[in-house]
Image 1: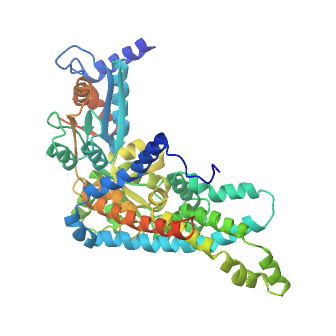
Image 2 (image 1 turned 30 degrees about the vertical axis):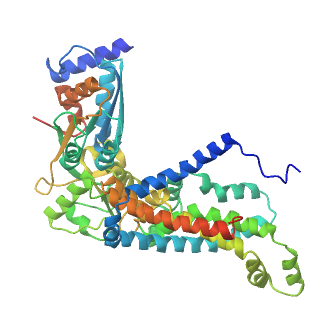
Image 3 (image 1 turned 135 degrees about the horizontal axis):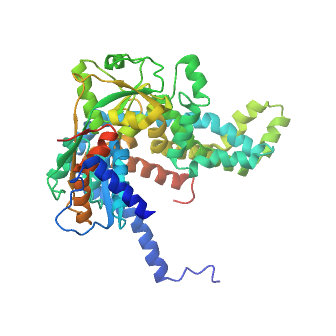
Length: 265
Length: 256
């Protein structure tokens, strides 16, 4: 009976919940109050803002593509295969979610930098190095964003009824056909959710990018880097307007996702 | 041990600066408490040394430093960061502090610096002069345009009449140095003092006087200073023969 009746009103809880909501809302309100609305069009029309936004869009989409390409098979291996050290592998694959991004940047530098573990021999052989290039930005963003895709897709694979795959196999479909025609369509919601989460994380990436890829307009300076540089160089209005734009995009993604994939609207 | 350090510091004072080395401000009260100094990244080694000396002389004093690119520090001051002293690597950034009315005293120039090209140890790319940096195959790193070392680098390139497209724009000179030491960048425009403090991890390629700049380093006591006595004392020490000697030993050009 008690379960069915609505929760009694608890003042303490309500106050704390209200403070919690304010804690999230006040910084946004502060930003809105500080926004120089009159100069928003001129700031958004500034070529440097456009350059940063374009680069952010391209790099985040490319890193999402890279994360899907490598992350879906990794999620499949984690969900379907049994092998020693799987727990450790899952830990490594999700580590960037909790790692400070700047640490990721340092680690990437030491692995893929021009004198890094892998990057060194590649640079010697081909003369190409990832740091200071747009592909470097994509790698940094994928490193930080891919775990979101991996855990979402792995959860999707686990909750999926594996008997559909078995049935397809017994009907003579190859493993590749089963993956393409049965598995991927069935996990489409979690794949979409994982991809959008990874994309929004990539869009907001800062620490690993500036550490590994550097900061140059048009090549490696994404919108978050541009915001930081604007703030640092005393261009607060530009920083505020760009921040606002990032918030609008992120909020739209979160609201859309919450409705469709992450529980009730 | 404290006594020993004190004596050593005293000897250093006598040895380096003669009788008037330690300027004593108005009262005889020794500075104590915590002193917070915001200083340009290029001052890291020299100011840390001066801070250590001060703490040895005044055991009640704790000197805290925050080293970063000058514009970063200006933003912090404008946003109300609690600090006593600000030292910049150029006049433009100091002017922003003065124009905002954040200074308690008039800024004073306490040192000069010059630029140098930092290359990876041993100079594997055989960079001989500024003109080599115009080669697109050479990855050149420099400070962001608002950071003093970035502004100065632009001046050097325009004096040389060359166009250099950097691979990145760093937020302070030490980041440029790191990228060169790591070998990610082939060359970086830094201060003479940075090459000196980096030791064997980088090699310096000199920039001739006719292409070089002279950087002015101003220092000021901030209006928001919680410890004005220590702030004044620190500035006096930096300007004293003792402080100038330390700055010189790190490659700065003393004033006066």
